[in-house]
Amino acid sequence: MPVLNRWSDADAAAAVARYGAGGVSEDLALRTYSARLLGADPELVLHGGGNTSVKTRCTGLLGESIPVLCVKGSGWDLATIEPPGHPAVRLEPLQALRALKALSDEDMVAAQRRNLIDPAAPNPSVEALLHAFLPHKFVDHTHATALLALADQPDAAALCRELYGSRVALVPYVMPGFDLALAAARAYEEAAAAAAEQSIELEGMVLLQHGLFSFGATAQQSYGRMIALVRQAEERIQRARGAAGPSQPAPVPAPAT
Image (cartoon, rainbow, N blue to C red; front, side, top):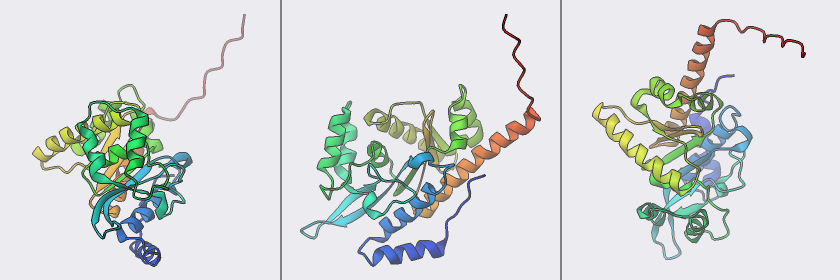
């Protein structure tokens, strides 16, 4: 079944009101609402995979306004995630880590935990730095089935470039962690500059052999871009199947001699 854009303004407003009654900000309420939309579709996030974030602000103990990244925490399923599932991490210390040339997984996790607003919160996603290094307010990441059917091919880069043109950045495969965050940030900046020269806005990023990112100024924009990009991949696969004609039965193997 194709992925569908299931955003509802009425449902989004209801989520803001419901979560707001418990002291949750509008940003985090909308982040929770659209994350659950993604998680409810198994074609996007098989077995609860993927991660989401929003850059916002919270108030410190002394009344100060703190820029934070609310990013999916370890152990939460996007289909059922609640506001605590996006723990707030101080954003500026995370962004400062980009100046490093290397960072072990252990040191990365420690740095993220040191900057949690709530020290009892779950560990932020292993891809939290990737979210932090991107400039957009809302960032969505899925392992969509249709996208992976293209991004896992030997000629994946050419296929994705043909399909999306300059609307997405392409990132060669790198294991999740600090190195991937750096590679993705560089790829994003290069692609954004090239897109701007063509008066095109960058809408997403394909991590080859991994998954898809979308981003935007609002939860609805980022979510809508994710659905649109995955739908393009689905349609590309359907066209390829049509061009190949009806499938043929597999040949019967010759008897063993």
